[in-house]
Every structure is written in structure tokens, then in C-alpha cells.
Image 1 (cartoon, one colour):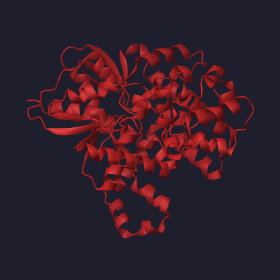
Image 2 (image 1 turned 135 degrees about the vertical axis):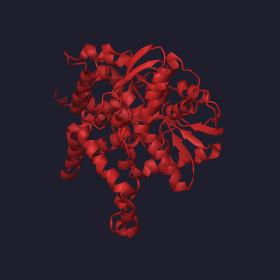
Image 3 (image 1 turned 135 degrees about the horizontal axis):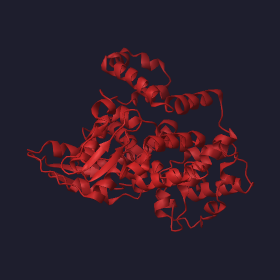
Image 4 (image 1 turned 90 degrees about the vertical axis):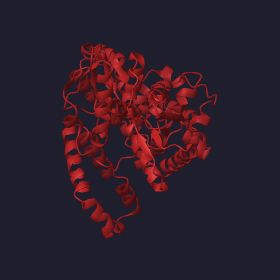
Amino acid sequence: MSRPESPLKSMDYSVVQQCMHCGMCLPTCPTYDATQLERNSPRGRIALMRAVADDRLKPGRSFAEEMYFCLGCLACMTSCPAGVNYAELFERARAEAEASRALASPFRSLLRRVVLGWLFGDLKRLRLVGVLLRWHQQSGAQALLRRSGLLRLLPARLRELEAMTPTVQSRFSASRIPPLSPARGTRRFRVAMLTGCAQDLMFSDVNRDTVEALTRNGCEVATPPLQSCCGSLHAHNGEWAQAQDLARRQIDQFPPGQFDAIISNAAGCGSHLKHYSKLLEDDPEYRDRARLWDSKVKDIHEWLARIGIDPPRPERPVARKVTYHEACHLCHGQKIVTPPRELLRAIPGIELVELPESAWCCGSAGIYNLIQPEMAGDLLARKIQHVRSTGAAVVATGNPGCLLQIQQGLRREGLDLRVAHPVSLLAEAYRDEA
């Protein structure tokens, strides 16, 4: 299915009209907070989107740059009294920016084709790149390159990007998790486990921990070894046609009628995965299955809170202070706020310390820290300052992008804190039982 010629003009106009311009979103928007410019606020961006939909504004370079300056953190949706669906508007606006080709250049077009089309279009390629990067890191080549001083010959931005290179896990999910993991004790549910893209390369241990927590609580878990990208990266960057194709692949691989739940442990992916019905609403073959799919997708915290967990009884509980950063697409996108905190409080030894501005974006926001490094850096510094104020030894958060971003911020400040997914802390407590 091809992308509409004008994504904003083709959408339900009532969505564009919903904004009352009340300004309740302004204090919650990180970019408006930083600049105090109306155009950098949710209602300012919606005004631009409506002008495009009404043919009063051409979607040129200024419009496109503004849509990519938005974090897409969706904090405005939490504060909006009118219930404006900014998530849909945001994706449509970026698709409009791409359809207009206002930002097009040979290099940018090539980069998007390689990353969005080639690399994330088939995860076998992504894993191959991961294997090469893992060799680069574990062979000592990366350390040698950094000590050699050759990196100083690169432009400053490339040096910054090299420093942000994440550590690839020694084993990917397929070698850590069997295709079918039986429930421990009585089987109560049959669920599917989504291993993700970046999650698989950098946090396959979190995927393993997720399966362990599920099996411990009565779930039989299906984890196919060869999975596809969920398409969130494509939808958030204006590539709707690719996002639709990837959604169809997911539905084909995980027929929703065969599972009690389809589990995601990555907040950004989970938020997108729950809206396949909107993505495929014009596809008669997949429309009904997409609605059923949406009802079955559950974040791991949400699912464990729903079925109830067997409290861990570790032989040697570790006393430690833990603070919790709320991933934007978990608290604002999926409205999941209490379950992660309940999970952490259920683990013996943990003292949960509330993080100031816990729901304020850390600056990761998908690939925002790569394309808007200055704003992302300011947001990260603000987050790390609040983390420091808690005195916690562990920062818990439920999204791979946030995990990497906060790890990087702590390294920059020389702080020796652990950053972990809440489900990993739960699985560790289970493993420490007598």
C-alpha cells in the first residue's frame, strides 16, 4: 500500500480540529520549555499541521525541520484536556515532511534507504552488523582505535557518535531463549515474546529475564528465533508504507488468536505495536486481525500486574536504593505508570526512591539524540542531575533507548550507578532463591 500523497490532508479532519489552543500542554513540552517559542510547542505544531491540511501552508523545509525538532515524547497527550491524538498527528506530519521531500538530499536519502529499508527491513542484516560490531569491541580493535588518537582526525560530531556506540551482547536472544519455554508449575497462559531490534543486539539479557519472569508466573512463552522489526522506527520517521509492511509481517508471524498476550518489554516498540489497527485500517485483509492484535499486545509490567506475580523470596536480599525513570512511551504513550513501581516494590531489599521529574524525557526519543544532539544533551544533563539527587544505586527504566541514554549520561558525569530494566531486577531475585 503506497503512502498517501498528503498524509495530513487524507486523515480524519476532526483529529486536526481537536486542539482548543488552551495551552495546558505548554509546561509539559520539553522543547517549548527550552525555547519558549510557540512554534516549538504542541499547539504551535498542530497549528502548522492544520495550515497544511487547509492548504494555507506548503510543507516546506521550515515545517519539516519543526516536525523533526519535536521529541514525540507524547507528554502533551497526558496533559491535554481535549484528548488530542497527538501521536497520530505527529506521525502524519513527519510522513508529510517526507512526502514533500523538503529535507531531501542525496546523502540523507541514501542513509534512510540503508538504515530504514535495508538494515531494519530484514533483521538478519542487522544481526550481521551486530556480529561485526561485537568483534570490533571484543577483539580490542575499538580500544586500540580510541587509544591511537586517529579519532581526533574525525569531525567533532563523528567523534561524539563513535563515543555513543553501544556495547553489543555476547549472545543474541535466539541463543539465550528456546523457541518454546514451558511454564513453571501450572500453565495459566500462553504468550508470545517479541525480542525487538536494538533490544536483541544490546539487551538480549533483558529478553531472557523477561521470559524467566513469565515462565515463573505460569506463562508458556513462544519466542521464534527469527523475528522482524515492529516498524516503530519507520512510522516515527515518516515511512508509513514500510511500517505497514512490517506490521503485516508481525501479524503473520504471531497470529493474535493463538495467544493470550503478545509481550513487549520495550516502551517505544510497545506503544507503536498497540496501534496496528490504525496503521492498517484501510487494508481489508488485515484490518480485523490488526484490531485483535492491538488488544493482545501487552507491556511486560502491564501483563505481570494483570496476572499477579509470585513474590520473589531471594536467599540473600540485596538492600539498595532504586529510582525509576518513566520511559515516555510507557507513561504517556501507553499510560502505564503504577505497574513498574509495584513490581519494584515487590522485590525484597529494594527501597524505591521517587525521581524528580520522572516522566520528563531523557532525550533519547528513538533516534532524537542522533539527529538533535544539543537538545538531547540538555535533557540528559537535567535527568542525570535529578538521578544524582536521589542517592540511588540503581536507575530502573523500561526502554532500551532510555537505558543507553542514561548509561551514557552517568559515564559522562563519572557516576558509578547501575541502569537496569525492572524485569531484570525481578528475574535476578527469582534466580537468587534458595
